Image (cartoon, rainbow, N blue to C red; front, side):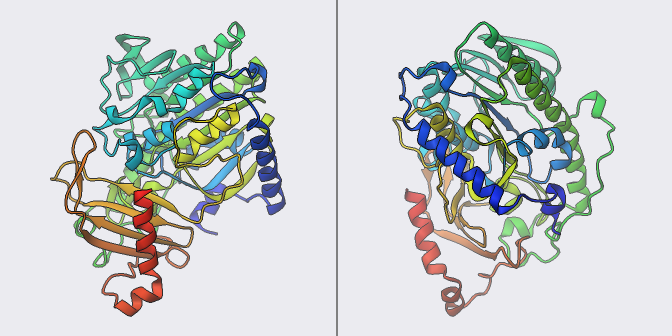
Length: 468
């Protein structure tokens, strides 16, 4: 049994998975008949939507979110192959909002948040369709705190931090004392409670700062003992001669990985408490059945894999994330697993399909309520400025293999791209026999080796994906 199976426990049978998929397809068919933006579908026919996005949340954090898993996994869908299409905060969140790749929405780095076309966002479409919209927590990196977030009717926007932080609350910048995850929880609960007098369906975007550095836990969890961890084969990977220079030069150790893992798990315990509080509130309100709930991390995080801490790399721990969905009224409440390759770009299409809204702008993702089944995913990342230690890259990610190209490209603060575009390094991993990405099969590969691996076709497909 591998590491993920040990954390996840026993899986759900194929029959249950197919039943859940069939129910989802039925919901998709039904919702497609509902009116689009500005339509007249009754509030009772449209689900409430609770979207929870955590910060720098690796996939292997199940120990800390057991209440979340019990609800959303036990009474919903667990996506075993959940990814983000850019493993960096602002680009990923912009993809969640828009359903588009970063090369299409324009937020290629954390400085470029204002490049997002706000008319393409799910919050815009929902507000136009009569939803009550709220934001509680972090919004977008480089967003000026005093600027109100567009298309939210109510908000408590956090200047990232854990204790006694600055907030923009409905247009007023102020300090709110206390632990920020708890403040996010309480503001969200108040928003939900308003549905007793406001009968409109609602959308709540809930985004605590956990488990981002400096990963400060709530006082009650500051000394909580977390399970021991002995790393994985990629931690720290002694021989990195087949990797690019920034990986060869990486120096983080198992001890470094353990330390950040411990801090992240402790901060996520408060997120788990908040999720349980949301479930309890929805139960009290009688809204649990017809609330679509989605939980995802905005990117993963490396615990000294290949000697690296952090995100922004093409390696699996950086772009694989926890991903859960529950919607009992939509047939997604029975505790199934879904093994399709899914991503953050699929969230906006899913929400709009559930609400019976047709997006007037193009989207790269697909509704999780449909029967789509992609065979691979584009994952991409850009260097900001010219001083970074690694080049921009793009990757073809399938279940069984991954192909990566690095490029002589960089971006400015608006997300605009410069450089020759020349390929500077390549990687190929057999994810079936080498899931920890230890052996780059393109290192010292001959032309015959590349043909055998199918590299020319993969390179052609990657180029097409980057232009799509």
